[in-house]
Length: 301
Image (cartoon, rainbow, N blue to C red; front, side, top):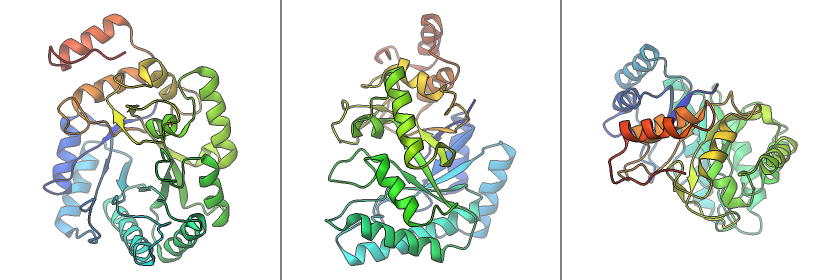
């Protein structure tokens, strides 16, 4: 069984992020190590790093993942954005090493007709400059705006272009997968999706799942996450995904809006914990709802 995690806010510093993870009863976590909408390099003090690593160790929070800033776009049409993206991703990897994180989750980005060529060049530069142990974790994309990573084959092309460097790994997002056109909601569709993913990059290189429901239907190419059981994927399919024999060992990290629109919350965390044991019974869902949901909240399906 994979460990249950979520993206948590680092407002107030990384030790505050660890405290939030403990409050949510997480087993692993994902964080930003800087402002997600700025190019600023992470500024982590030795005291902050020591405090965070201590909290992580005391509470057995493992693994830790860093999410790269949203501005990173290795495929951009603009040379200045590509250059800043290489600098940013390299500094994020150094920060990941400092805090003991497994790696940095990043979207490849989008660009013009030469987007793939530019992304390959950028990824090569990052790997040349990075000397630590944290890995680059490329995430599949919903596909809006011709973004690289909508097709698993895009990720395979990137991997091949860097000679299958062992420091390149992958993150599979359930909402992105559905929006990109992968029918993950049926047993047959999920198995076919996993065969396609395996052929493209190898399932052994997948480091984590982003477990999110989707506000949009199959193939809409729009990135809109929903709370578990509130979207177009549904609990039955999500349970099947996180318990699939080829995926069940992976960390499952939430990036849902939450019932208060404040990000992953206790109700979603506890529902994900239920899903890792299979589709919950009606009684189990009723008990979960009574314990964690406000009376007016919609029932997941």
